[in-house]
Length: 365
Image (cartoon, rainbow, N blue to C red; front, side, top):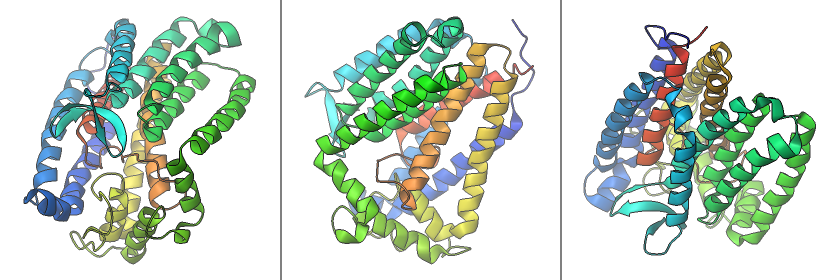
């Protein structure tokens, strides 16, 4: 086994910590009005975000110093546990409904989101499976189909909640791992056509998803209904201009923008910090992707390469979807912005995954 370097990738650490710090500041600014209105405490959201940030940083420190090969041994166990959680969360009385989806397990305001755990467990498992049987990946039935069946089953369980956004991120990162492992482009293109047909069927099967599509195409057709979030998001971004209105000066967070501290926090960031602030955040995410892919290319084995690609895929796909939704280029999907948006499960799991990526960087050839 290749000996680890003495230090992880400091570029990656600085980018991650910088994004986390920006996120904590923006959660306070974006959520202070709603927090005071609902809980009588302007610091309610930021205090909880700080708690989960500390837990996440502790988890990142642990995974950064644990040999990433350990996750290979527990890949199957992790998948079994995550599948069990996805089934349990669907049981009435056990799963908690939030935002119209039965996707939480917990008591009161504290809970976990099993689909968030599945995103990481899936890329770990696929990295393990495909690194062990890479010679079969070009064979559709023996190599590609088993991986797709596992991914498809997890996606189906997530859609029963339903949570199209998280399912899409998991599928996007998983397909990236499968492609990098050597799958034939002809097979993936054929599956893409089937996937598009399935995606259309999912949209048509649920009226609210169809409303999101029509709102995306013409939000002004229903400005107080399905198009409300997109319109309010654009109202936030527009006045931000080059330098923004100033920290804490957002107008849209005063009950205009629904849940401004979560899915649409990037719109509040654009309103307060302007184009310069948004560009700085995007550059930090690009550094995470760049250093992550560098770690993947320099990893000493196929498992490390695929796992690094999968973790980078989770970050990149989630950022693309969230920012795309906020600026009106994609339909609303309910995806948070990694390290920036308010959220316990997503923040802690993201930092844990990035710790694994940092450990991989320590083994660079």
